[in-house]
Length: 248
Image 1 (cartoon, rainbow, N blue to C red):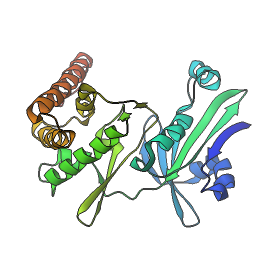
Image 2: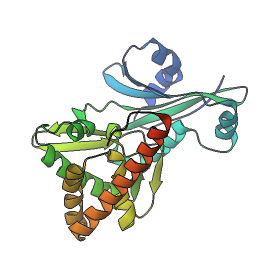
Image 3: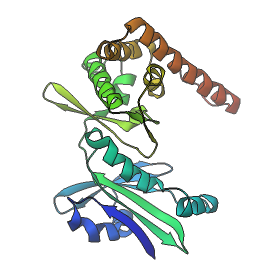
Image 4: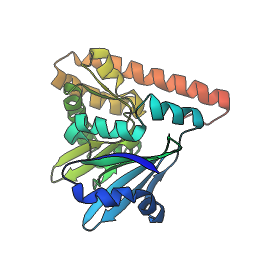
């Protein structure tokens, strides 16, 4: 079976491990997320590894990813090089081909031992130091934007948080869908919409962001709330059409 891969120069010793990733992944019971794709924590000697297995595309998309577009695994790898320290340390990716078409693919990074995602303080009104966490998150997001990084799925489960002493360290994951460009005022405000945050929490975030950004707090917060409410309206409208439960 043909394969394509790239491994970061700091991890040449993982070459054989990555070549056997299908077996390693299948035999591991440490799944931490399973939906369309699956994520598992693996181990090689003393190194903890997070491996993401991408769902095998349908026939049409197998053609597209084989000959015209980069696979999600490869895009994750290439994007990680641009995102740098904002995401867990990259190890590599590998693609397996069957009859010249993309079949299974994996993206690997070092395991980042986080304490919670940003989802927890967004959902728990009594979460300890939540306002402090939100202000730190605003500073992290501003630093991300200043590097011309826009995460297209900047949603709660994709933002990991680790507390170290009195500081909070943030990492973004699920990075195959990104934009790398200078961010306008509107795009910066829009980036918070997928948090699905309530207005008060979003105000805390946007006020801190506006302070660092050096723009009018009221204007930036108004724009941030506009995009957040707009997305909620659109998503809830679709849910109502499907008869699904609506969450404001």
